[in-house]
Image (cartoon, rainbow, N blue to C red; front, side, top):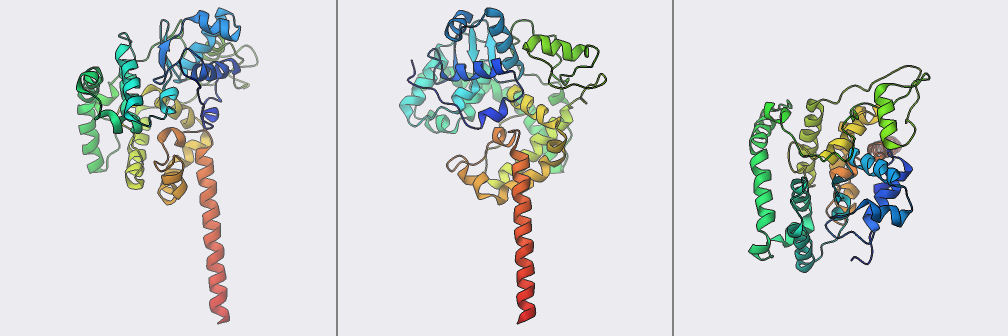
Length: 342
């Protein structure tokens, strides 16, 4: 059992789109006594209802909403919360061995692939992975080989497109799939539709989402509306442009295409916001110029894609850029005046 659990300050902006009940459950999952350093553990519903004092229906609504939001994966009584692993400091090989032992002892869950990818993306863990005995790494290496085989063709095509300056989604990527567990009866919710409601009772998509989350719709409008669909081309465009910036700035790139479900969900939510959709590329252009974003934000390792996808990050980057431009303009004016006086 862990002695404590921690929550990132930046986690709060990332979960603003879910109900208060789901926010409480997300915090519980990161700090409860049933968890571990991997973030994957058995969690019968009775544990939660007893600890928080909820009815079972409240728990089901909240856990379903978190799964739909890409914040966790669930299969029967097992959950995987990637945020727990992401915030777990793996400072030495013994801690890495402990996390890997938890992974090795897991049953054959439908989201083992996602756990293996999350471990592979954890810099501190991978630094110490080579120092772990070979027999302890067998299961992990099998999953990483599987990940490599599944994405090899797609990566080769993406590399050719980058060389040619193309940003078109490869055909095999359009047809690619990732395993996402669907808890309870949530498969009828259209996750690509904004939660809307009309004055006379609402759209079918809005009614389904509201019923599943246990919370009122997020917006009211005078008529039925549906958000424009987020195409694979738009997602792939972000993948290509972000990785170009990350390579230039020395930051961690997005590991693979297709991207993982949690990342896709966060990206889709942002692409539906007009300011973000119009300015994310301009914001990425500013990142290599910022010492804070490239070095200090994570104690030397720099900004991650999840931090860039925070609800307020693009606005913050653009505001800083305007400040720099204004400062440069003022300096130029002062210099011109000085030259005129001399």
